Length: 191
Image (cartoon, rainbow, N blue to C red; front, top):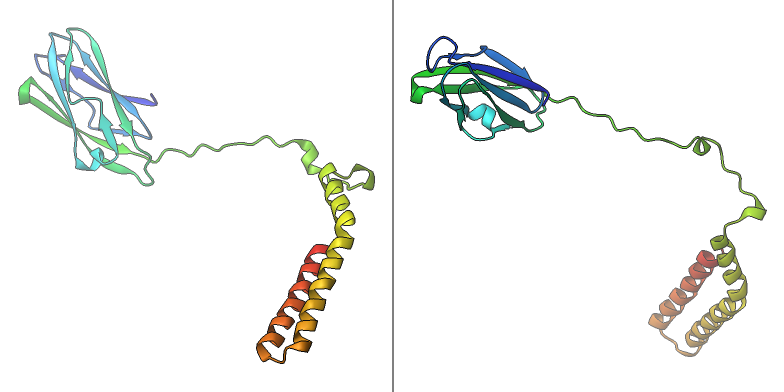
């Protein structure tokens, strides 16, 4: 854990609590409950401001005689500092202390990407080293040129013949659309 807040228990007398007045962290931290005397129950509570961005691993904690108990505090990523109070209670309310806790934004970790040095050099396009996929597409276009052109010519012939034999504005517009469509298709195919 990045940091820890130490709470001294039973140093001077039973249920005695000794803790700093303020604490700051920029991520998850622990509350170390250090007991210097007999067994004790400790209640920890985050106020509303802190509980919006942090949570304790349990609220009530039993600490063995002359032992230390670590309590994890998880913290969400914050974009601005958040300040609130951590309440520390022993002896069922006999002793209460408050710690002003400030949670700072966590520094953003920069991700690095290794780049191959060959990517910095311009790539040459040699006719001899054309990709197999490009060669396959060129072969299909060359082999299908004649049938495609024949089909396009047939579509234009049918459209013009229909316009010539049927005297209608709708047929004239339809024929013009067929001729324009065939022209666009040929341009996209061979252009």
